[in-house]
Length: 389
Ligand SMILES: C[S@@+](CC[C@H](N)C(=O)[O-])C[C@H]1O[C@@H](n2cnc3c(N)ncnc32)[C@H](O)[C@@H]1O
Ligand code: SF4
Image (cartoon, rainbow, N blue to C red):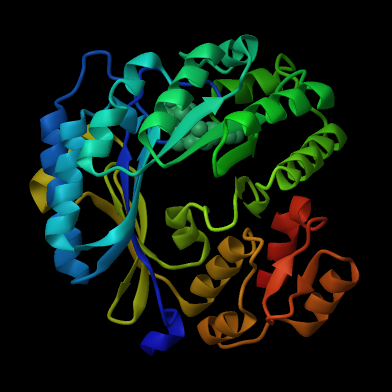
């Protein structure tokens, strides 16, 4: 297997750092997040993260880091000195580009907003706030610890400190109407600068919402209304100069989250911290990595091995190509079919392609790239399954 077969000619390299703790567990969330009422030793986690960064660098060698993303869990529970220590460790083991985007996911409580200045001093240059809703009743139902006013205040603090900030909202919530969402979305856009993440509520197996939904106690918008809410979201954001660049992400052109683009473009990223996923290019092969999810067990692995890996699998060319499709077709920029061919050793099936094009689900752009059309996006999973099979 030659290098060019599995790896794109130019690849950004990103580092994802997972902070796995939250103050409480939101009933819809299936992210790797843990509540530790007895507290935890933050310095020990910092040392362990430093160790995992060094071990990963020893394995893959030199890289220039184009972005770092602190995700969670709730990274805004970290002391700024911990964030600084992690950024320093990344800079010590790799080359941190001067232009690197360094994002941190923050929950918008007043306590967390007081740390924003410290994060900026530590090197963070972009925050992403988990606002979720702008009305108190919804926030309560979502199990959030902040009010709408507190979230707006946190956005104002973010705006005063960072040139780049984004926030997340969840829509298609119980009892949500088109009119209600239109008002909320316009309110959000008035607060937004360059980027917004707008997620449709997903009922994730294993969460309290899943049980309630199954028992008929949590009713979410039916398919037709959910589709109308999605269409409205696309329209309102595009009209406001924040078009979708990915299924759930909207930005002014040029203000896309560079870190997330690394995932969707199939570039390379290291996953650091409990339950982090990575895709590493080593000796011409692409490896899928995962670390131990449970924080304490991850610490034990670090103590023994210096790294918390539980999965470290060389992907087959077909798997790399399918993943490239799955991730790349989420983007409005679409994919380069030639790269799919280079990765998989086969062209996209012309008959399937023609079928999807006739149905208006995908289209070829003037630059030769293939993308999902706006009307195809709600059917994205089916489109990808059709092309990948
Ligand atoms: C890792 S999570 C949360 C980060 C941060 N702890 C917070 O809650 O603000 C990233 C985002 O995923 C979204 N999210 C999580 N679970 C979801 C679900 N079940 N349906 C839709 N969006 C979800 C939320 O908008 C959340 O802000
Ligand atoms: S949504 Fe955020 S705060 Fe809530 S449990 Fe998940 S990661 Fe933690």
